Picture (tube, one colour):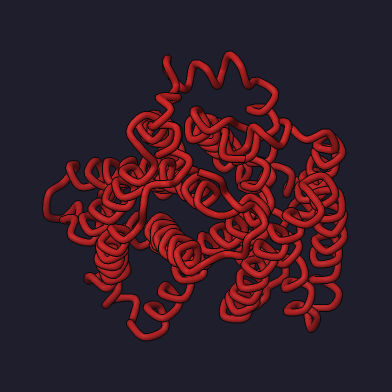
Length: 433
């Protein structure tokens, strides 16, 4: 079964890519919508006489639970993804996301069932985290194993853009609900709407995924009986330490870049520079659109020029654009949209991350290798980044800028390191190359 590695993407490839990106966008929407309504839900799901700081700790705890559940869900799903097939896990991860999201929309509040309410909320959040842990690596592997090798970067970049589109969708839905409904209506049940929407769309996306086919590479491994003999995860940890380390650092770049520039910055603009909430959200939406474009660009560039050059140039761009943005926002607020758009675009370098990840591990442990590295690193860095930035804020208002500069340096060093490709070309597509 020979792949023509230089062929263009055909209709089946585009179908695969669209369905995968759509599912990824919905999963991210489901995961992120909680963040936008965390304050309201804090009031509804915890006792009213609870001190404010404790409520914040609990809301943050529920948020963190979503991150910490990722490695667990992701590693278990990847294990079966390497043994029984990519497609089955791909459908399962959407089901695992849609059902808890629907359930979150239907949960009784503290007023009706007492302490069970926050516990159920926590449980749903854990399930969501587990699902997203399987989804992202699953989607990257699935698509990378379907498309021609010379198009892996573009395909994975597009998928990553799909995930960021999910964040944008969450932001838009939150904005619409907050502008059309009064705060009282939202408290009385308006907050349930975005969860219902997410759950229903998710089930629809799961139905659509029936039209996907198992990846040719997995079918071929099955035919050759080349599936991992032992625990795929064990093989990853024993034989691929270098690949795991690089993948984890790249995940730090990916998760922290998005968390700082996209998720934390709107609040930062409001608090630090007194920029109107509506304005900062509009600028943020523009930055997310630019980020999506940046992801596809970075992936396509990686296809043409390789990972090394992409990360060297992309990291320098990230350093320059983000520094410009954070430096000028206080002095030239009228430039906000332009500088934020540039910063958003430059974070698009994260679109080239999956290109390296899917090529780093051989097919029989690919899903487990990516899932382990990505999810463990995401749980650590995604969870710690807001805390770190907040701590540095006490020393300097330019905290986000310094943090992103640090990430740029890591990206630059990895770019130089990737100069000798993580593994020889032929390992990428198994024996299909």
